[in-house]
Length: 189
Image (tube, rainbow, N blue to C red; front, side, top):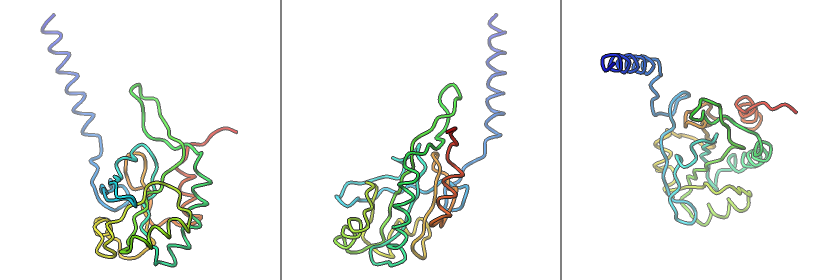
Protein backbone atom coordinates (compact mmCIF):
# COMPACT_ATOMS: atom_id res chain seq x y z
CA UNK A 1 0.00 0.00 0.00
CA UNK A 2 2.80 2.42 0.87
CA UNK A 3 4.52 1.62 -2.44
CA UNK A 4 1.26 2.34 -4.27
CA UNK A 5 0.82 5.72 -2.53
CA UNK A 6 4.45 6.62 -3.34
CA UNK A 7 3.92 5.72 -7.00
CA UNK A 8 0.69 7.72 -7.07
CA UNK A 9 2.43 10.85 -5.67
CA UNK A 10 5.26 10.44 -8.20
CA UNK A 11 2.75 10.24 -11.07
CA UNK A 12 0.87 13.30 -9.80
CA UNK A 13 4.13 15.25 -9.50
CA UNK A 14 5.11 14.31 -13.07
CA UNK A 15 1.70 15.38 -14.36
CA UNK A 16 1.96 18.69 -12.49
CA UNK A 17 5.43 19.33 -13.89
CA UNK A 18 4.30 18.50 -17.42
CA UNK A 19 1.37 20.89 -17.06
CA UNK A 20 3.68 23.68 -15.89
CA UNK A 21 5.87 23.30 -19.00
CA UNK A 22 2.82 24.07 -21.14
CA UNK A 23 2.22 27.39 -19.35
CA UNK A 24 3.68 30.33 -21.19
CA UNK A 25 6.25 32.30 -19.22
CA UNK A 26 4.96 35.85 -18.83
CA UNK A 27 7.50 38.64 -19.17
CA UNK A 28 7.20 42.08 -17.64
CA UNK A 29 7.36 44.76 -20.32
CA UNK A 30 5.37 47.25 -22.37
CA UNK A 31 4.46 45.14 -25.40
CA UNK A 32 1.15 43.41 -25.98
CA UNK A 33 1.30 40.06 -24.17
CA UNK A 34 3.69 41.35 -21.46
CA UNK A 35 2.75 41.84 -17.83
CA UNK A 36 2.52 45.60 -17.26
CA UNK A 37 5.27 46.98 -15.00
CA UNK A 38 4.19 47.84 -11.48
CA UNK A 39 3.45 51.46 -10.68
CA UNK A 40 3.43 52.74 -7.08
CA UNK A 41 3.42 56.53 -6.83
CA UNK A 42 1.74 59.35 -4.92
CA UNK A 43 -1.87 60.29 -5.55
CA UNK A 44 -3.21 63.82 -5.44
CA UNK A 45 -3.64 63.55 -1.66
CA UNK A 46 -0.17 62.04 -1.15
CA UNK A 47 -1.15 58.40 -0.57
CA UNK A 48 0.73 55.81 -2.61
CA UNK A 49 -1.47 54.02 -5.11
CA UNK A 50 -0.31 50.82 -6.82
CA UNK A 51 -1.34 49.45 -10.16
CA UNK A 52 -1.34 45.93 -8.68
CA UNK A 53 -4.13 46.97 -6.29
CA UNK A 54 -6.43 46.84 -9.33
CA UNK A 55 -5.62 43.23 -10.25
CA UNK A 56 -8.79 41.37 -11.09
CA UNK A 57 -10.09 44.30 -13.16
CA UNK A 58 -9.59 45.43 -16.74
CA UNK A 59 -7.56 48.65 -16.45
CA UNK A 60 -6.61 51.45 -18.81
CA UNK A 61 -3.26 52.98 -17.81
CA UNK A 62 -3.58 56.50 -19.19
CA UNK A 63 -0.53 58.77 -19.50
CA UNK A 64 -1.52 62.43 -19.79
CA UNK A 65 -0.85 65.94 -18.43
CA UNK A 66 -2.91 69.03 -17.64
CA UNK A 67 -0.94 71.13 -20.15
CA UNK A 68 -1.47 68.65 -23.02
CA UNK A 69 -4.38 69.82 -25.23
CA UNK A 70 -4.80 66.44 -27.04
CA UNK A 71 -4.87 64.72 -23.63
CA UNK A 72 -7.55 67.06 -22.34
CA UNK A 73 -9.59 66.49 -25.49
CA UNK A 74 -9.23 62.72 -25.12
CA UNK A 75 -10.43 62.97 -21.50
CA UNK A 76 -13.91 63.78 -22.91
CA UNK A 77 -13.92 60.48 -24.82
CA UNK A 78 -12.57 58.61 -21.80
CA UNK A 79 -15.35 59.88 -19.55
CA UNK A 80 -17.93 58.70 -22.07
CA UNK A 81 -16.22 55.29 -22.30
CA UNK A 82 -16.26 54.94 -18.51
CA UNK A 83 -19.99 55.67 -18.47
CA UNK A 84 -20.61 53.15 -21.26
CA UNK A 85 -18.61 50.32 -19.70
CA UNK A 86 -18.99 50.92 -15.95
CA UNK A 87 -21.66 48.23 -15.64
CA UNK A 88 -20.30 45.72 -18.18
CA UNK A 89 -18.78 42.50 -16.93
CA UNK A 90 -15.21 41.48 -17.77
CA UNK A 91 -13.53 38.12 -17.13
CA UNK A 92 -11.11 38.15 -14.22
CA UNK A 93 -10.01 34.55 -13.92
CA UNK A 94 -11.33 31.31 -12.52
CA UNK A 95 -12.30 30.32 -9.01
CA UNK A 96 -10.97 27.28 -7.14
CA UNK A 97 -13.32 24.89 -8.97
CA UNK A 98 -12.38 26.22 -12.40
CA UNK A 99 -15.52 28.30 -12.98
CA UNK A 100 -14.94 31.59 -14.83
CA UNK A 101 -15.43 34.68 -12.68
CA UNK A 102 -15.99 38.29 -13.66
CA UNK A 103 -15.92 41.84 -12.37
CA UNK A 104 -18.13 44.80 -13.26
CA UNK A 105 -16.80 47.73 -15.24
CA UNK A 106 -13.25 48.68 -15.87
CA UNK A 107 -10.86 51.04 -14.15
CA UNK A 108 -8.81 53.98 -15.37
CA UNK A 109 -5.38 54.41 -13.77
CA UNK A 110 -4.28 57.96 -14.70
CA UNK A 111 -0.58 58.79 -14.74
CA UNK A 112 0.15 62.51 -15.01
CA UNK A 113 3.34 63.96 -16.46
CA UNK A 114 2.68 67.25 -14.72
CA UNK A 115 5.23 69.17 -12.68
CA UNK A 116 2.69 71.53 -11.14
CA UNK A 117 0.44 69.87 -8.57
CA UNK A 118 -2.15 72.68 -8.62
CA UNK A 119 -2.49 72.43 -12.41
CA UNK A 120 -2.83 68.64 -12.17
CA UNK A 121 -5.55 68.88 -9.50
CA UNK A 122 -7.40 71.61 -11.43
CA UNK A 123 -7.41 69.53 -14.65
CA UNK A 124 -8.78 66.48 -12.81
CA UNK A 125 -11.62 68.61 -11.45
CA UNK A 126 -12.30 70.55 -14.68
CA UNK A 127 -12.31 67.42 -16.85
CA UNK A 128 -14.42 65.53 -14.26
CA UNK A 129 -12.02 62.60 -14.04
CA UNK A 130 -14.00 61.14 -11.15
CA UNK A 131 -12.07 57.92 -10.63
CA UNK A 132 -9.76 57.66 -7.61
CA UNK A 133 -6.65 56.31 -9.33
CA UNK A 134 -4.52 59.35 -10.21
CA UNK A 135 -0.75 59.29 -9.70
CA UNK A 136 2.22 61.52 -10.48
CA UNK A 137 5.76 61.96 -9.25
CA UNK A 138 5.52 65.58 -10.56
CA UNK A 139 8.70 65.22 -12.62
CA UNK A 140 7.21 65.92 -16.06
CA UNK A 141 9.10 64.15 -18.84
CA UNK A 142 11.61 62.83 -16.29
CA UNK A 143 8.75 60.90 -14.69
CA UNK A 144 9.73 57.41 -13.51
CA UNK A 145 6.40 55.89 -14.67
CA UNK A 146 6.90 57.37 -18.16
CA UNK A 147 10.41 55.89 -18.29
CA UNK A 148 9.15 52.48 -17.12
CA UNK A 149 6.55 52.46 -19.91
CA UNK A 150 8.85 54.05 -22.52
CA UNK A 151 6.39 56.90 -23.05
CA UNK A 152 7.71 59.40 -25.59
CA UNK A 153 4.48 61.26 -26.34
CA UNK A 154 1.13 61.82 -24.70
CA UNK A 155 -1.65 60.89 -24.65
CA UNK A 156 -0.47 57.30 -24.46
CA UNK A 157 -2.31 54.39 -22.90
CA UNK A 158 -2.09 50.67 -22.19
CA UNK A 159 -5.11 48.40 -21.72
CA UNK A 160 -4.45 45.49 -19.36
CA UNK A 161 -6.56 42.48 -18.51
CA UNK A 162 -7.46 41.22 -15.04
CA UNK A 163 -4.08 39.45 -14.77
CA UNK A 164 -2.13 42.61 -15.58
CA UNK A 165 -1.27 41.50 -19.13
CA UNK A 166 -1.21 44.22 -21.79
CA UNK A 167 -3.96 43.57 -24.35
CA UNK A 168 -3.89 46.90 -26.21
CA UNK A 169 -1.97 50.15 -26.59
CA UNK A 170 -2.80 53.67 -27.69
CA UNK A 171 -6.53 53.02 -27.90
CA UNK A 172 -8.58 56.19 -28.15
CA UNK A 173 -12.26 56.95 -28.75
CA UNK A 174 -14.03 54.22 -30.72
CA UNK A 175 -10.90 52.02 -30.79
CA UNK A 176 -10.95 51.82 -26.97
CA UNK A 177 -14.69 51.13 -26.96
CA UNK A 178 -14.25 48.34 -29.51
CA UNK A 179 -11.42 46.75 -27.52
CA UNK A 180 -13.46 46.85 -24.33
CA UNK A 181 -16.48 45.39 -26.10
CA UNK A 182 -14.31 42.60 -27.50
CA UNK A 183 -13.00 41.69 -24.04
CA UNK A 184 -16.28 42.09 -22.15
CA UNK A 185 -18.53 39.18 -21.29
CA UNK A 186 -21.48 38.99 -23.64
CA UNK A 187 -24.74 38.80 -21.77
CA UNK A 188 -28.11 37.67 -23.02
CA UNK A 189 -30.62 40.53 -22.99
